Amino acid sequence: MHNLLHWGDQVNWTPIVCLGVAGLLLLLTRLLVVWFYTRRVLTKLGDNADVEAQMEFVKSFSMQKPAVPHLATNLYYLSDVVFIIVALWGAISTAWWMIPLGFIVWIIVHRPFLEVMQSWSQFHNVTMFKDDADALRKGGLTPEQEKAIQKRMGWEG
Figure 1 (cartoon, rainbow, N blue to C red):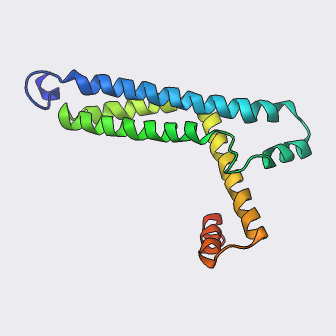
Figure 2: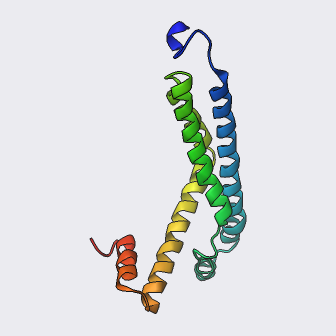
Figure 3: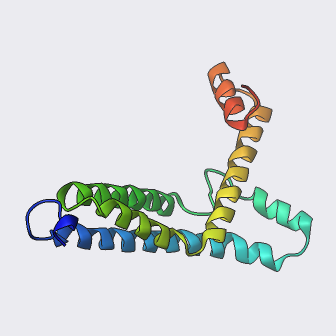
């Protein structure tokens, strides 16, 4: 047991508990994102077999009116960052094995609803691409904005 300790003879349980709390926060914010995406997009796309109606439904979303509210997305990203910081803090203050423990918890937390989250990512990318194409088509952009959009869309190398 002494080889697992980093400093002293006692295990510092505070970072381990904080890692569990951060993992729970990460899981809850992930479930919030899944709930919004499932409720707003997947249930409505699944009900309608008409491809034309599905395309119109997808067009109703934009980066200004996303499928998942910005607050939920920002909370999810923030909880990811908090989890990483807690894992690194645990490795510094407790022991080296906090990094593998953090990695294992990360995998366990990100495993549920993996397909839904990948679907959300693809939907988000399609929405961004559509908004960028609309902005290019509409015009009125500065050359720098046009170049940035074209680079983001992969049209310039």
